[in-house]
Image: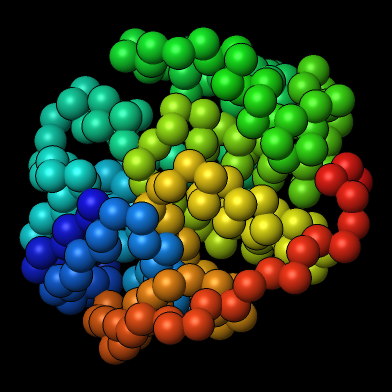
Length: 240
């Protein structure tokens, strides 16, 4: 589902070239839950941006579902992203002038190839994350946990084969973080997606089938997790 070959990313800092990623090679098969780990500055967020086609590598290639994306024109790249990837950001990235329902519907509205009823799908997903009575609320009227649940619903609305999550619980307290993680894993199992999660938290990575660890732009560990942790279940209700 995801193939990375010779991936490099460097930037110019005055007269000096700083190498952020130093030639990465790996594949992530369909349906796998892979956690990309590393300390701040290890290159993990840069890698996720390249995997999602949000940045261009200095060398190498990323392929998603058999399509090489790294050097596509922006219009074609946007089409591939729209069909292939759902994204969950640490800071939610909701549009403040749209309601929860309208935020979830946005990818559908922007995708001319969408065939099913976007409204029905969006309502179903918001109900699944416990926000059936908050659909007409704007982001400012929602708590952080509720906003991230809207972002989860939005990520899955087009049934993408790949979902990428960048520290999805990083802005939440422990209870809301556990709830969002549980919902993410439940939705991922239900939809059968490939999940790539960036985190610095070993406990969070413990739920993944595979852990890829970066240090100074290199992969220093790539290991399968034979016994992924299982959430005991969220102790609170679906509504805050």
